Length: 318
Length: 320
Ligand SMILES: Nc1ncnc2c1ncn2[C@@H]1O[C@H](COP(=O)(O)OP(=O)(O)OP(=O)(O)O)[C@@H](O)[C@H]1O
Ligand SMILES: [Mg+2]
Image (cartoon, rainbow over all chains, first blue to last red; front, side, top):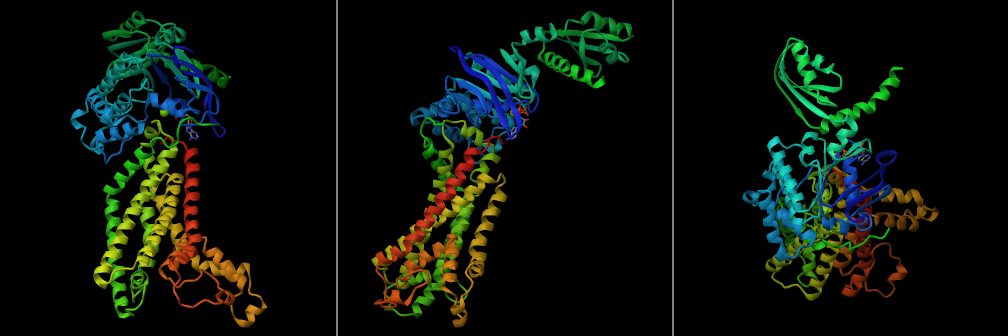
C-alpha cells in the first residue's frame, strides 16, 4: 500500500438498477500521471466523484492517501485538488476574489493567502487579468483558473476531469505542459479524457474504461503490445483513385481514416509502410509522404473495441 | 457511518461571502426600495389617522403600525406581504444557482461539508433580512418621531422590538422554504414560482378554505343551528387549520403585541373574562406570553423546513 496514493478495490456504483461503475480495481502510484480513458458514459466521472466522497460508494472500497473518502472526506479534500469537467466560477467576482473565497474555505491563514494566490495566478499566466470579473473569461482562461485553484491549494493529488475538452490545440498543448509541470513537482495527476492522442503524450499509465469496467490498464507501450502486438499509426499522403479501399485491404490494418485531401491514416498492428507503399504504387497512385508513429493509444483503442465487438457480430450473423 | 471533522468548517467563510453577495446585489437595491416605499406608504396613511384620534392614547406610537386609512392598508398587513416576498427573493436560487453556475462541485471539493454551505447561505439570507427589517423599523420609528412630535414610550419601543424579532423569525420560515425548493428544483424559476405559489395559497386562499374545511369536519350541532352561531368545535377546528399558515401565526403575534388590549388569540369564553377589565391594556410581559406560542411555532417551522432541505441536499448528486 506504501507508494499507492489511490487504491480502489471492486469499486461499484449503482444508480437504481443501472450500474455506472462495475467492480473496478486499480492503484495509482505517487507522482505518476494516470489517465482514465473511455467513451461517454463509461463511468470516469462517477469514479472520480467517489474518490472525493462527493457521491456514495455502492460497493467495494476506495482509499485516497490512506483515507476513506466516505468516512473522512475533509482529510481527503484538504489534500486533493479537483477540476470538474465543466468548471464554473462566480461570474460577479474577479479571478482573485474567486481564489480568495476558495482559500478561506480551505482555511489557509490570512497571511498565507495572498502569496499563494499570486503564485498560482502567475503560474497559469492569469496575473494580468486577475482583477477582471470571471464573466469576461474564455473557456481556456476558466480552465486555467481551475488549475490555479489546485496549485494554490498545494494539492498532493490533482484530479482533472476532461481538462482539455473544448480547448483549441494550442491551449491544449499549453495545458498539458502545465500538467507535466505538476508532475515535476511530485504531484500525482489523475486525468480523464477521450482525446486519446493528446493524453497519450502525458500519461504514464492509462486505464481504458468501457461500460463501467476497466477493460485495459497499463502504460501505452504495454497496451500496444498486448492489444495490437505493436500498435502503429501510419500516415500516407498520396494521390490516386480507390486508395482507401486498397489500403484497407492490407493485412494487419485495423482501420483507415481519411484525415485530409489525399491524406490517410492507417491503424495497424505492425509497421505496414512497405505494403502501404506498394499498394499505392500498384494502384497507379503517386506516393508523396509516408510516416509512422509508435504504438498509438488511438490504434489500441480502435483495435480493442473492434476485438470486443467481433464475437458479437459473428453471433449475430450466425 | 460516523463522519470525521467538524460539519461547521468553512461556515463563516460561506456566510461572509454570501452576505457580501447579497448586500452588493441588484436584488438588494430592489428590496431597499421596497422597504422605503413601504415605510412611507404606511406612515402616510397612519399619521393622518393618528393625528385625528385622541392625543391621550398611551400607545399612540403603536397606532403608526396598526392604523389603516382608506385605501392604504396598515403597516402591519403590508409587512405580512413584504417579508415573504423579500425572503423568497433572497432564497429561491441559493442551491440551484450554484448548480447552474457549475460552482457546486468545485466548492464541495474543498474541505467543507454540505452542512456548512447550506447553513451559511441560510444565515447570510437571514442576516440580510434582519438588516433590511431593522432599517425599516428604524425608519418608521424615526419618521414617526418627527411627524408626531412625541417620543415613543419605553414599552412601545419594547413592543415594536419584539415584533421586529418575530418578523425576522417569520422571514426565516419563508427563507427556509425558498431554500428547500432551491434544493429540490434545478431551475430557479420553478423554485421561485413554487414558493410564491405556496405563499399565495397560504396567505390568500387558506383563510377562505379553512372555515369550509372546519365546518365539514365539525358540522354544526343542533344548538348551533338553533342559535345560528357557529359551533365551538367548528371554531376550534377553523383556528387550528388557520394556524397551519405562518402568515396567520405572524399576524396573531403582531396583533398581540401591537394591541396591548388583546387578551387572547382565538375563542374566549365569558367565564374566562371573569374579573377582567375589558379594553384595559395588558402589561408587556402578558402580551409576550400571548404571542409566545406563535413565535415558537414560526421558529419551529423554519427549523423543520431547513432540516428537510438539508436532508434533500445531502442525498443529492453534485454532478451538473
Ligand atoms: N445521477 C445519475 N442517475 C442515474 N444514472 C447516472 C447518474 N449519473 C450518471 N449516471 C450514469 O452513469 C454512467 C456513467 O456516467 P459518467 O458520467 O461517470 O461517465 P463518463 O465516463 O464520465 O462520461 P463522459 O465522457 O460523457 O463524461 C452513465 O451511463 C450515466 O448515464
Ligand atoms: Mg465525465
